[in-house]
Structure formats: structure tokens, C-alpha cells
Image (cartoon, rainbow, N blue to C red; front, side, top):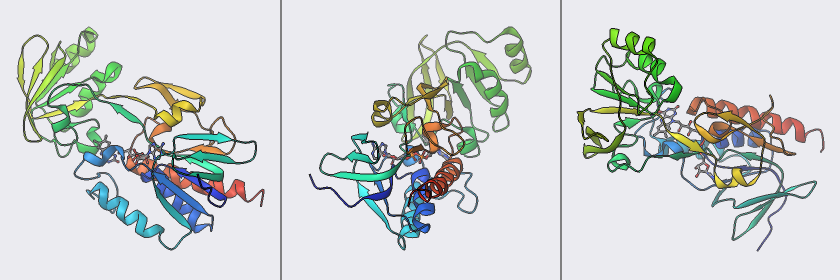
Length: 302
Ligand SMILES: Cc1cc2nc3c(=O)[nH]c(=O)nc-3n(C[C@H](O)[C@H](O)[C@H](O)COP(=O)(O)OP(=O)(O)OC[C@H]3O[C@@H](n4cnc5c(N)ncnc54)[C@H](O)[C@@H]3O)c2cc1C
């Protein structure tokens, strides 16, 4: 296994958070490598929304432009996966299986793992007519026959917000009824509230047509918002970092201080893995901030 020269910064994950950190650190003349396994969360979506100036850009095009922006700087793109990270008291050692990298600082920007239910029809519709976030795709689903499911304690408020995008809305409460006051409130808004869990989705290509419920009901629906549970990636789980409880992430999200530092030395985190506000713009902002802070801390030990 060969060992490359000492890096200032190793970025694990080449999504919006990692690439934004690489831009800040690269422009600060740091030697940076970005190792990326190449599966950002939004890869299935046709476009990235709520990104001012680039509204609707295809995820692959966003990545292509980011790498083009990074070309003038000392930022190396490594296609692969960091299997393990170890700190020797001074530097971080990353094991990529076929090679090793050594860095003064590491930024975790691995995103999170979405735990999609195994309903037949979900993979075909996910990111097209079944979505997680109404800010990202509510506009594309406007005025459709919508169904909301899996938002836990947020379900009633989620339904109130969703009504802005469509007045034709069914809310599925699973087997936990909504408090009577919320139910009455939603019904007064014309929202249908009912028990039941989806078990399969009927579709025409990527277009949702019906939702099969566990009681045998077929709901004719053309758009779904699904609250998805998550976990951290295997690498992040292996590090035993301090975390913050998160109702949608079984591992919690990674705890960071104001600078983005985790509970281990010279190990930062940015993007989806350390927040509930999982958006491309937020990931870019958090990665950029971490890139600046890492340069600032490294400058104290030249
Ligand atoms: C279907 C869908 C649609 C979405 N649409 C929008 C939208 O329209 N607008 C919006 O603002 N947000 C959207 N989001 C949310 C958005 O995708 C995320 O907030 C954003 O991608 C987070 O960026 P990130 O850099 O933290 O992680 P990611 O984009 O997930 O990137 C993480 C990268 O790290 C890599 N990686 C993981 N582990 C390792 C490892 N051990 N070694 C090397 N590489 C590793 C992964 O392969 C991946 O490439 C959407 C999400 C989903 C699921």
C-alpha cells in the first residue's frame, strides 16, 4: 500500500459540503484531497431546487461545475471510499483499501444513509413523484393529489405547510391517531386524515398512480411526501463521535462546535450528517465555513 505526501486537509465525501470546503481550503493554498464514493443523496433527482442562481440544475452538472471551479487549486479528486480513519496523536491516517492518505485535518462530509422502506414501486418513483422535502419539490408537485406519511410528531404541521402546494391532500397517520384538536383543524382545512400504512406503490414509469394500504385500500394519488428515517454512514458510525439526538436519524446527528469541530481532534463535520436542515445551500454554507476554519486552525501550527 503506497502512502501519498502529507495533506493539509482530507475531505471525505464530494457532495456540496465537501466540494465547498475544498474550494475554501484550495483557494487558501492548502494541499487538499477529496475522496468521494460518488453517491450524493440527491443523485436520483432531476434537478436541485432552492439554489439561487442555479435553480433546477441537474445534480451531476452541479458536481461537474464544482470540479471545474476547483481545477486551478491543489485539490486532488480521489474516486474511492475511506474505509477507516485513525489518529496517531498528530495526523489522521485514512485507509482506502488500495491506498492510504495522511492528513493534518479531516473533514467528514459523507452525507447520511436514507433508510427507504422496501415497498414495491418506491425505488421507481423516489425522487420523481415521491419526495422527502416540500421545499425541494413541493412546486413540482403543486396541485397534484398528494399523500403525506411518516412525518412522526410533525405530521399535523407538515400537512398544514403542504396544503400551500396542494389542496388535495390525504394524511396517513399509520396506527398513531393525531390528537383530536389537530385532526379537527386539518379536516376544517379540507385535508383527509386516515389511518393506515402504505405497503406498495403503483406507478406508470416514475409517475406514482396509486398507494396500496395495509388494509387493502387503494388510494389514487400522484404525489407523495415521505418522512424518511436515516442513519450515519459506516465510516462515521465507526468513529464513535458525540452526537445530538435526532428523531429521524437512529444514530443522531454528529455534534459539532461553532467552528464545525467534532469530539475528536482535528476532525470536522459538514453537511447533512450534522444537521436536520438538509439542503444543498446549507451544505455548501457549512462546508465553506469549515474550510475557512480549518485553514485558520492550521495556520496556528505552520
Ligand atoms: C431525492 C432527494 C432530492 C433532493 N433534492 C434537493 C433539492 O432539490 N434541493 C436541495 O437543496 N436539497 C435537496 N436534497 C437534499 C440534498 O441532497 C442534501 O442536503 C445534500 O446533498 C447534502 O450534501 P452533503 O455534501 O452533506 O452530502 P451528499 O450530497 O450526500 O454527499 C456525500 C458524498 O459522500 C460520499 N461518501 C460517503 N461515505 C464516504 C466514504 N466513506 N468515503 C468516500 N466518500 C463517501 C457519498 O458517496 C456522497 O458522494 C434532496 C435529497 C434527496 C434525497
